Length: 115
Image (cartoon, rainbow, N blue to C red; front, side):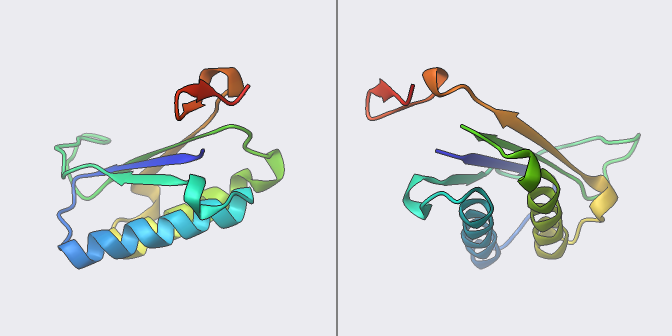
């Protein structure tokens, strides 16, 4: 169950949020070869973020998943960065993405772990 969490200091209209969530879900599912029904994407309310000494538009993104193939890391980060840059009007060099490969024994759905 991949889970993508997006935190930004940009305020987006409801329809922009919906579009960002839907497109991000598609990217993660496609890149990781997972059914969309197992992918979760969240967008936190706008936060105050200071990056490199200023509070201009920025984003911190975290993707947690059981298995993030080495061959997909760069293309996954590129697609997510491009989407957030367009959707939130943030320069790509102000978007941090952290990829976390979670061991299946530490991930649970419906009361039991995957491993």
